[in-house]
Length: 90
Image 1 (cartoon, helix red, strand yellow):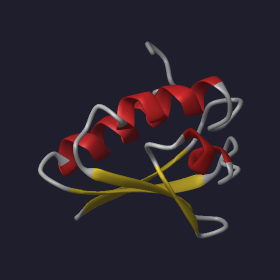
Image 2 (image 1 turned 135 degrees about the vertical axis):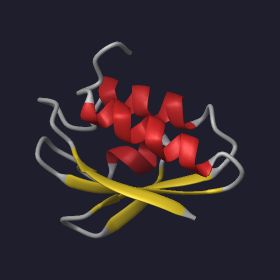
Image 3 (image 1 turned 180 degrees about the horizontal axis):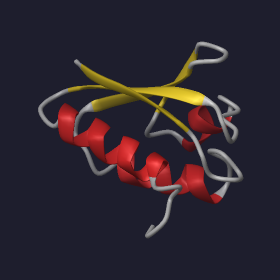
């Protein structure tokens, strides 16, 4: 298992378009991927738009991305990078 933490810094958090982009990216990887809202300690499947949306991840929310599988490091690093970029370029 590989994991990293970051803080969501885009205006809308992980809602609507950013959540959709996040899930679309997560689905490109074979690993099982989870995202945790570190304020509420709720965890959801990063490949499910519904599971991501119910986490209520807003601007300023610390999150942890966990992955397990053959491409776990690549998956986590890519998802953290897109969060850190504020979803620019997606």
